[in-house]
Length: 162
Image 1 (tube, rainbow, N blue to C red):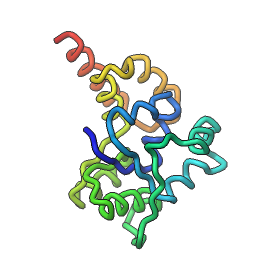
Image 2 (spheres, rainbow, N blue to C red):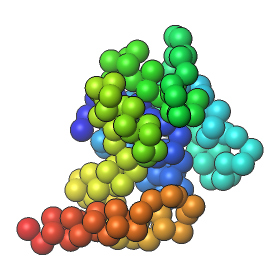
Image 3 (cartoon, helix red, strand yellow):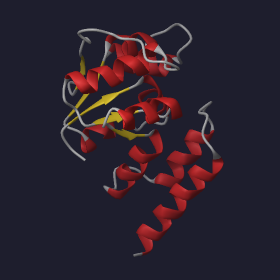
């Protein structure tokens, strides 16, 4: 992975909570978010740790407006804006965990990458220790199947043994 990527709020939110957001710069040259996603990450109900990170973002994060925001059925405003920003900037990948959002991304010809996918790649690059980070992730309110997390840990174990 390299080049720019567009992110929805979910993956960035959880990567910040488990202290892995800064490792995104090892995966992508630039992280683009629409203002709608920035707003979600600064919302009053967002954990303070996420808000603090967003108030002083790294130089490789850029807030980029969407020219025309067209509602997409079953998607929240942030997901819709992220998908449209990816199309507008001709970015091939989008960070997104929501299943409907990921399906919409695929229909639009985009490659969805989830929080766990980012973490696995960071582990491959030896930027993080996956077992410890997944343990931290389980302590958040992320809605993710335990089987998905176990599969990622198993792939990581096999990778480290080869």
